[in-house]
Image 1 (cartoon, rainbow, N blue to C red):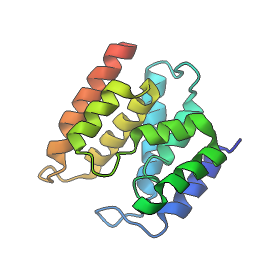
Image 2: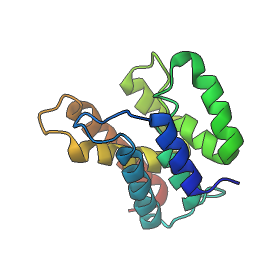
Image 3: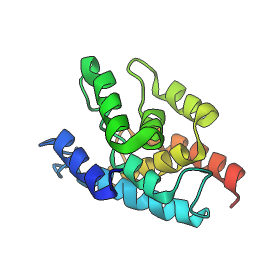
Image 4: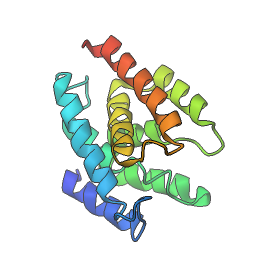
Length: 161
């Protein structure tokens, strides 16, 4: 089975020269999301059924690979993630990947209804990281803040405060 370090190398290769809105190398974001996801998971007890914190970290570092892949190659990329990192990690990555054409509101509502607790941990970490470096007046703040609130409330309902 592939290691967390293998997931980092895979994500680094797939994101390539991509940059964040502020010019930082894109890979910084998935690495911070993985660290935040580990911290959140541990704050809730660290283990969710058959999903370990290690699987959460791997999926977190890979969380944007599917979304950032050309539409015609998404299925191939999903199969590659499954082959390299296993069904559990692949499933988590797919759960947090917003399908093309789906509104953000529908995506978040679906995530809240259908996703595993571990996927919600990853999405919470993703939103926290996105919000940490967006200017307060950035338009995505209006999208991410309510989503973060809903996901945090759902995790608290599922796992306790």
